[in-house]
Length: 331
Image 1 (spheres, rainbow, N blue to C red):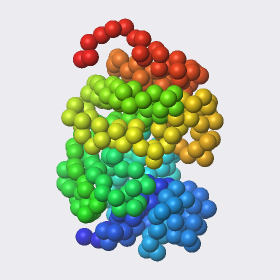
Image 2: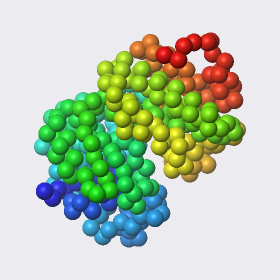
Image 3: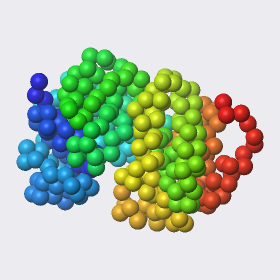
């Protein structure tokens, strides 16, 4: 059934999702934070973050929330994670209770340590909420390269409806009821991807990367399970799958930022080198560090990344600290 869908956020991921939904025959409206991005999309039919993508005429971008939200069956949140709460407060009086809210951003709120679906339910308590996540670089989705992804909700009927709306011959959608695990995996993998980039920037090899990814996944899963998530989620698409693609791909801004830090740039200079793009691993490290302490979980990689980001620790010293920890069994 044809749906009207409003997407709040006109960056790469928002535009990539608009192309998938347009391909499936749905009416799509985009909201942009800036008039400049709105004009590029409407007049030039392109996205500055996705140089190879051509945006169809049917996908129209607006600069006001009301036009995008009014009449939409589904509202997709694709803003940077740090802006989600403020965005929700901006729209809470516009949104109607029968509109579905789908979270497509990844992160954990730093000051509350809440997953963002809980933040949505706090501000919009009458709306149904779901999450879409997985190994899905916008650059490839926008070129219709085969991708598998997960939609998570505690409401199975809603998950199945959204699965039908998104799924096509290049965008395969699975469902999962473990919202907590899906969100934790999507948020914390960005910290490990930042560390993976640092590993590369220091000149380390495949052995080092494999060790980092494996031990990083263990930290994510231990913390997630302590928070009530299911262990199997972390070995699926939104756990290992998302972690692998974010650590291994040059499309990952977390990895690219980490490479620059590993080569000796400061965190601020590395972010500037990426053109001011949001590096979610830098945002997520605060919440990851706090959650590990709250739940009493040992997370040496996350801890070292916190020191690199916030205390100016040199990347090489952080790597040395990880390698010279006390001897122990693997499990």
